[in-house]
Image 1 (spheres, rainbow, N blue to C red):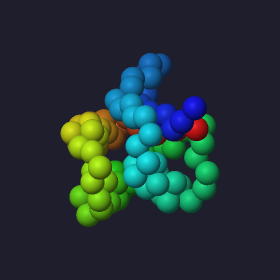
Image 2: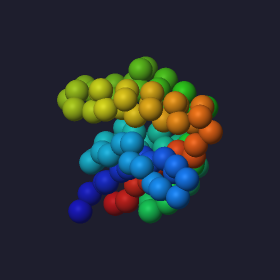
Image 3: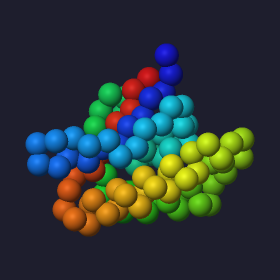
Image 4: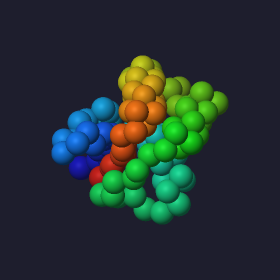
Length: 97
């Protein structure tokens, strides 16, 4: 068992995965802070403001001290999620542990 995380966009009646992580604790911490509650097994609808906070936290923090494993994946997720939001789609983050 461990921390599994996904990001997805709802397009019409379809759900399209735009991010998938395993045990990416820095990202999880930011989402918990943004939600202000336990987010286990909940879909958190994202906003552009939330993505800005995530991006700022990532750039100012020390997310990748031990590994660069998620650096480019995080960047692609943020850029992609912003694009979907600007097109009027709903973007969500979900995690379970």
